[in-house]
Image 1 (cartoon, rainbow, N blue to C red):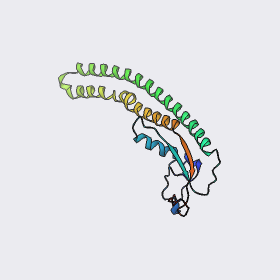
Image 2: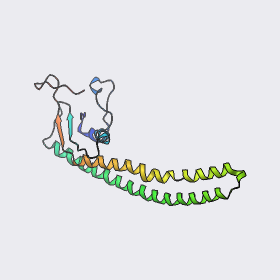
Image 3: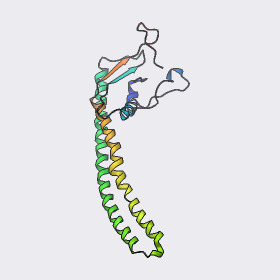
Image 4: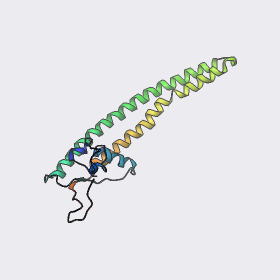
Length: 180
């Protein structure tokens, strides 16, 4: 992953559209770029992180260790937040599921008690009773899926080896290409 500065790992880079050398950089923080790639990966996939900084930046000898420690702190904090969201979503989901079942019983009971002359209203009450269950189903199935996906991606980053390197320009002896 190419970054302009190591700080861009956790914050959005300041890109200048008037500078051609910024054309190939992503405007999201580096960690968000990594997460979007991990979301597309298989659930058991492992990650390896290599951060490439432009030539001319002084890399301290402990750049790898410092970046790794920062990544660990960041991922642990994010995992804790996601775990809190999962617990909150579950609690609210179970509570709304109980109220939803109560609504199904009450509204379907009312629908059964309505005369045939009012059949469209009875049908509407019956449909409404089942629509009310969408919120708990969404919370307990779909929302939890995304929270678990986030937690899995943060755990993959937490376990990923991380390397920080400087990239040589096109005219260097290695013959590598220059980053934008």
